[in-house]
Figure 1 (cartoon, helix red, strand yellow):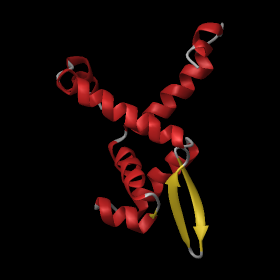
Figure 2 (figure 1 turned 60 degrees about the vertical axis):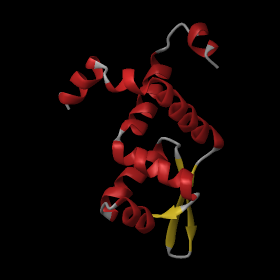
Figure 3 (figure 1 turned 90 degrees about the horizontal axis):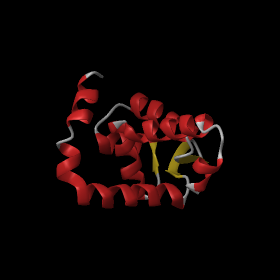
Figure 4 (figure 1 turned 180 degrees about the vertical axis):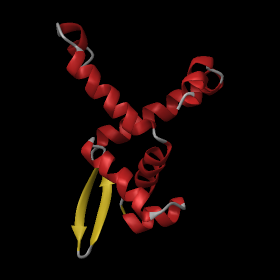
Length: 121
């Protein structure tokens, strides 16, 4: 897969897509939703909102982004929309990220560059 970057003459489309994907996962509320769905398996907007202590409209907004980015799928069950993680690759990305941050927690948390970027937001 990494060869896709080295074999392309113009990496801009792929880079833009990767930035958008990781930006979707970098929002705290969206990441909370993803972690909740990985743990629970499936949930309605109401269930997610109640468990995360956030408004239903906020959760719906973030679920829309996660759906557009291919992170979650939605199934209709009667009058409810039930959300699930879209595929095993998303779960693997999160598992790999958790393993990575477990190994590099101190250096990640002490990164001055990230702290500066976050303070500008």
